[in-house]
Image 1 (cartoon, helix red, strand yellow):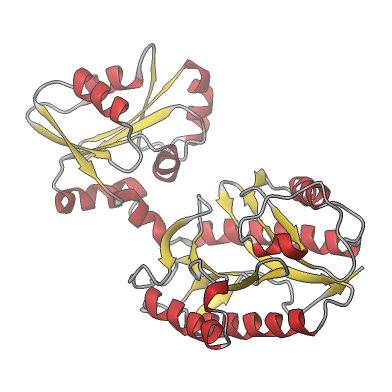
Image 2: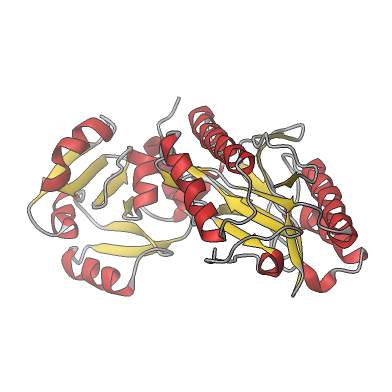
Length: 357
């Protein structure tokens, strides 16, 4: 099986470059195995060099794949990287989406004049889109940690505790269960606050009768999980129950549409039509889902703004919602692996409306 570096090299010609300068640390990790905070890689047909500073010399010996020459530099990484460029005129690709203007200017200053720097968009990210077996295993483990932490939280009851306290408890529990960290800042939003899709937990106590949106995830060995459940604290009333069943049904339609070859815009539309058709056109504005992996938001995006084709091995969320200002919000989200026949749901928490104390 080809290494990730070999797969990148095979894509260089199509990108119009001879060599790739990889500085985005997420992409560096994907290609080399390195998890530190300062490092870069030069990758080409005759070049596989990883550079870092003294702080990470020992770490690099343990983490960076043996196919790379491992170099500890005494000064600026770019300065020393220039010494490892092959001879002759070169077209060197840089990551245009993550390279700052200042960093690009510095690279132009330090690299020899025979080097033409060419902005490249999404070359490594496209490789990351389809997960291998190990990646799926790590995302699955992250999901299992997150699932177990939420179940423990709900068993302890929500009423009388603040949103912030619940979010912190959830994140602490995930760490105790083996997570490196939460994969993003957890959302716990009760009542009218749940109508904010990206609400920040407050020092406000949860009261009986409220719907509570909980959006959380764990990071395990670099890989993220993402899930949302909306629960009722006591009896939420008929309006909330009706809205919940609408979102649940729409989410199932979305899940049924997710498979290899599926069009992201069409899948989003199938769900959006149901929610809008029920009179909630102004109450659901975000996309249906997004890719998840080393980052919590990756390609592809399931949205009315995109027309991507899903590939087997991609991991995506399916997360429609209804948000009624001043009243409540509802979102239901699962994390799934796209397959040729459909998808495999990683999230194992039941989705029927759950009432807790």
